[in-house]
Length: 87
Image (cartoon, rainbow, N blue to C red):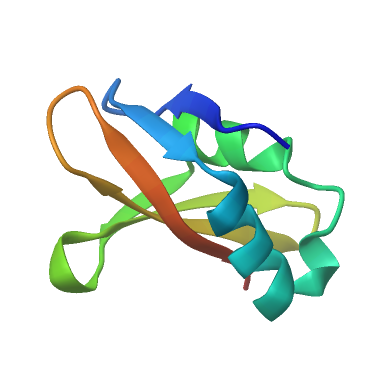
């Protein structure tokens, strides 16, 4: 998987790198094959919360659970995914 870029709800480009995707899969293997759902969670989140240490949490309902993407906007034009999980 090459680095993917999508826009957050605040129109900031958010990068999902191969390294971060591998990290997500190590901790949350049930997300395997679902990397296409992360951009939608970021761009059309049902809820955005402030997280720890300057992160944001985008939550998007998928079936009975929420896909939660933790990310950081480091400028008005750039950011990156930290991790993701289902809750």
